[in-house]
Length: 108
Figure (cartoon, rainbow, N blue to C red):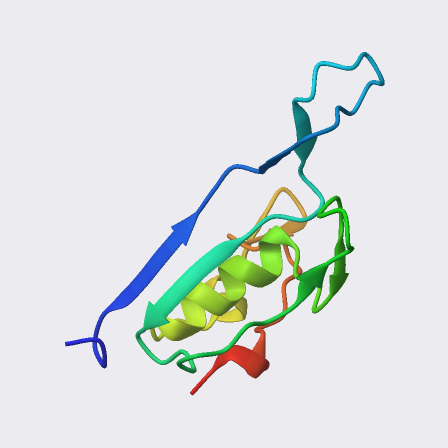
């Protein structure tokens, strides 16, 4: 079943023991380094792609922005994100905001 099904789990951002503003409330928002979990649907099993710094604040290896993630998901669903480009008011538009690269390192 996992050959044909892509499962994705993701959180909004991570929480940490320190805060962003220095007010000591311990509710840090780590929006520059968060986790996504994917299984099946053409992904490599048992792979960890990327890492954060030692505090978990920011991506340090295998950085992937939102457009890259979306381009990769669309690729796994059999869609070419670049083929979805349309022109409106003299500007190109697409779901990946005319950017995004497929993360080939996670493909089976």
